[in-house]
Length: 113
Length: 114
Image (cartoon, rainbow over the protein chains, first blue to last red):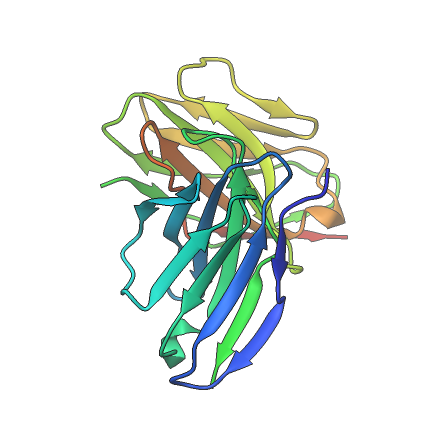
């Protein structure tokens, strides 16, 4: 089975712009979670989607949003980018909700100038 | 609040030797899972091993094994016969029943020296 894929792998944006990141889960996986990784804050949970519905949200401002499509693919969007949004954004998928092992994609490296 | 603590920011080991990475966690939950993930310089987060809290037997995966002490809330990772390819950041993570979010420790940077 193919693993979790994320596109694009690298992105450079300027402050005030918006960005959309994409994640394709492992085939058959229905739960997709997003994490932000920075040197200062480490790995922080952004949100989780299951059956096209956001089920959980981390402590991030409303500029961070996402959605999930009927084929379980997910996108996350960050509007009005700030310098502090520079990070590695990781997507993870699991077969079901509830203590299932999450498998990670390679991440999207976002740099905000 | 659920927290995960990795007290060793950096460690090094000689090739072929054994190294143990420490992890403690804090939770009032009784039903949870613990994980060790590896993140090499390529940045891909890779699952190393997982442990169900209800299982007393320690999980093992080839050269990787854990020492799970539920009462002490401790979950250490032992890597035997270390290889150069084991060089990476290692993250301890925790997820509990009813939650979908992994809580990660800050990580331990492991360097395997030739």
